[in-house]
Length: 209
Image (cartoon, rainbow, N blue to C red; front, side, top):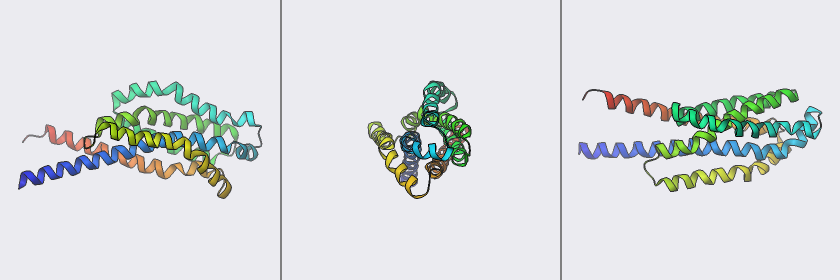
């Protein structure tokens, strides 16, 4: 009876780990791709708000993408050293802080700078999201887990223009950044929980029986 209870607890823990890892990884990749689609439709509104020409405001898009492209390999190596969950959590935190900075920006230079920082956070998430899933998920086949991950990867660019259009026409451009904060908070919470579980498992493994 005690053995069956232990096995049941282990299965529940595996399921919980899987859900946390899937949500964190999928949310990370979704956020980083959603933001690109939202920004593309927001450029005209940003031009008006910051009283600048179109070429100047496109720096907020190109610098974001350039930052991701130039740092993602570095963060991939860093994830192997520090752990995918740690880097994913740091990515959520940095992306959330940068999103708030973008929403509060009153000058174009500030917006561009915060977007560069946001790109670093996105690179952290993209470099660690899939690896976090493949290293943690045990209760379902990895191809299925990666299929769910791939769905969110595809949803970001598809939903970005629609979500951006709705927000711009209703509550204004700052909300294309504020909308990121609840997702960042939920993703960071999931990585925190995963880290706590990992520390507990290590403590159990080295404790004397």
